[in-house]
Amino acid sequence: MSQEPGTGKLAAINAAKADAGLTESMKAGLGQENRFKSWADLGSLAVLATVEAGVMDWLRGLGMNSMVKYGVGIVLLAVLLLLGVLAAGIYRFNFTHDDLYLELEDGRVVPLDDAGSEANPGSQAQLIRQGPDPVMLKLFSLQTPKAFSIRLPDSGLSVPLSQFEQRGGADYATADYRDAETRGSVLLDYLKITPLNLAPAPTQAEGQAEGQGMAFVAPFIVTSQGTGSFWYLGMFNLNTREATVAHLGSVFIGDRILLDSIEPAEPFTAPYRLSVHYRDRGPQEAMVETPSVAKTLTLAVSERGITAE
Image 1: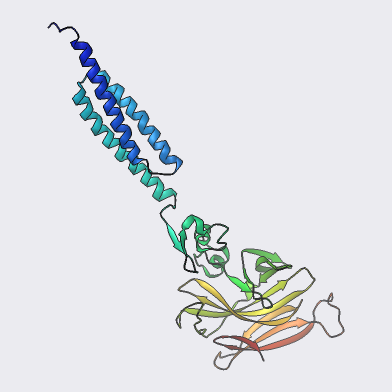
Image 2: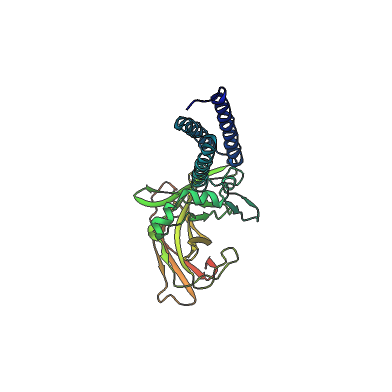
């Protein structure tokens, strides 16, 4: 069939206008979906734009009229936008914390990423990320990020135990600390942990009910820049429901002693008592001498703490 002059040019012009309208509508659609902030989201939009151009070239190559191409393009655009939104949503909710918030102990609600920043050291968000605490895992088989902390008897500073060391043939759970200008270490002699047959009284800080904890005593050493190694016997409570250890109190034993044993009274009934057997030096002996004088320290233990008799 013969074609009237100018008809082919007019059809080409109409097709080009339709293609331009389709391209603008697709860009507008992409603009409406451009609400993601990450570089991955921007990358997804760039991929969609590239695919759009390819689709338009493919439709032109098929020789379809403008209305058919417009309809097919809209369908393909909807599918591509849906896939892009799904990909961006999967990235956001699996690899970012943009929509996650955490309530801090002081009542503030902050984004999860901000909660673990330097502005909130030791926050719960940091605990969530660091995984099980190695000391709690080894000593109590607890999968918890909460640390076993020793409270320094003199200053009350709480020092979380963080690693295991062997010193002088003995095994310890240890941590370094800094208290004002004082630096030192805390060493828990965990092989001498002694369970107690009593349930500590609930405290406001723990918020626990009776029967949820296991009381125990354990000796620990506090050192500083000086030469002293100060031994204490601490009383603790393991809260099995919250997977936490509370330090209830401490009693000083001696400086650079040798601890032999800790013996609860048998049977361990009220009044509760402990006997700590250790070796110390005589009044005239220098601190560099090996302790050889046998001594016994008797301690009174109650539901709320430990005291020397």
